[in-house]
Amino acid sequence: MINRSPFPVPRAPCPVPRAPCPVGVNVRLTNAMHRISCLIACIPYDVRSASRNAAFQCTRFSKSCAEGRLRGHWGVSGKRLRRKRAAIRPDPGRGAASAGNTATPPYDCDPSEEASVMPVNDESARGFYGADAGEHLSYLEYGSIDLSRQRKNVTGFLLHQDAYDFYYLSRYLRDIFVYRDVIADADASPKRLADAVTRTAHGSLPNLLLKYAALCTARELLPHGECLRLCETGSSVFGIIDELLATNAALGGLELRSYLERAHFVGHEISELMNRTTEAIHPNMAFSFATDARAKDFLARRLAYDVYYCMSVCFQYCLESAQELAAICQPAKLSVLNQLPVSLQASRPVVLATGKRGVNISLSEFIDGVAQLDLAFYFQHSQLKYYEAGEVLRATRASEAHSTLYLVGLVGRPLWVETFISHYARIHSQLEAGGVPLVSSLTKWMPISDLPNSFGSTSTESYI
Image (cartoon, rainbow, N blue to C red; front, side, top):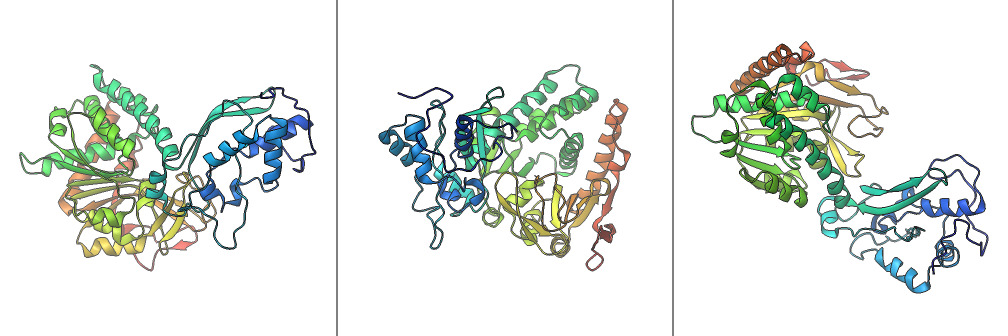
């Protein structure tokens, strides 16, 4: 029988020193609330990675203390405790403590009878995170907080790729429904589109301008009757399709759906759930998917595409060097690199807020790689964002140890780049004429040779 009283009878003094409540409520804890706070602090994490991760351990919470409180204070039988322990037992193939590492992994200490730890997809975790998840991992938690009692109840808990899928799939599906409302609106207008964009995950109208201008460029320059081939890294559920259709509806463009139904979309997306959802919600479109976590494996496929698109953290997820990005841009006639994070020195590793690890590629090495391919390289001057070492980066939500520059870039054949810039300015004017205020400097595209020679204390003069 579970003792559900909020004030369980103490059986032994708790060895955990009193400390501020880990859920951030600054109150003086009673003995009972102190025990609850300790249990909350030890919400279960995947011991395969947490055994090497002091940040996710309650360092003052010993195995004996955990078992004692589960048995004595919460009425958990030894049999049930063994079942709980077995449910989070580390996989010998991953996360076994290395020699010299004797840190005690945290135990399942959730006092809520209803709380559960959802299963971790081992293969998906291995597929992206590799054999060693390191010191950061993705997690997703759902539950409730009783503010009057300062209690936290966790009813669902996910790690790794499962956490990423459950959070982002719902986020991107909601965006698709927002854009489909615009598509279905017979009175769709630029203002209607702009209002819809504010209710999406990224909330960026300039992002739509980039995608729609790339589509208009391909439609103009591809030979008559030739189908568009569009590739996106981090394609998720291919929301770009609904974004294009919604933008076209708002601007009163030519019929577009039949054109896209003849196109072929290449998704560079590691999530099987995302890929299957893509096919389900776009039944009349043609897709192929590359689930490679790393760009070098994606490049080995030697895929053909006319337009390439990638944004922000997706560069960091898959790239290990600037040469890889140059190689990805090579087969494309036009590559739109939205918010590309680069290092002004050598390529540097980065840990993202999602728990995944990545790389900020070297800008100088990328410029050299593009030049060797005889491709044009332009950037959007008003969208340059520079962060000094130690500043909190918007995309990673983390402080980095080196300076980082974000830029919106175009790489491709000179005619395609020039045509894109022309279409971008036209679409910008259409939106403004429709009552949508946009920054006029968005239309200012410059060759990479005109990149400023310095940002903050970091000089780029040596290679530009």
